[in-house]
Image (tube, rainbow, N blue to C red; front, side, top):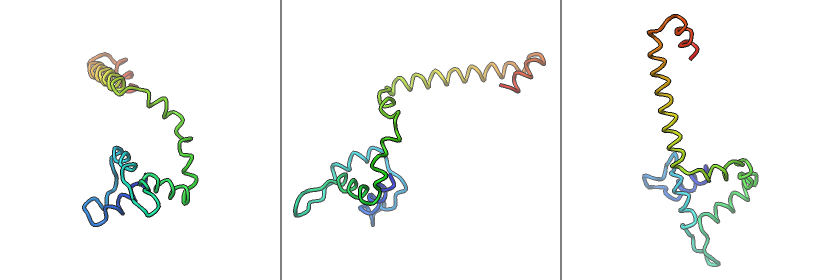
Length: 116
């Protein structure tokens, strides 16, 4: 990601985008669409980036092995995640309400509130 940011800043040098501290992940899709035409063939920015990484940072070529759960995670639908998050948020609010309500109860509740 640092290399992509660096290349983006070099390409955008002299513009307001030339000193970015980050980029949107959607921008990665543009790496294959940005081409340089040489005398022998056209090369995408993605091809160039892969060549640079292979030459200077060969240890990064196996980065995918550090992401074993990525394939499984990619199969989870965002709608399902949103529903789960909503349910957790609702449960947390209910727990907070019960904790607040226990403030009026007997001394046993005070011990419970400290632990909770």
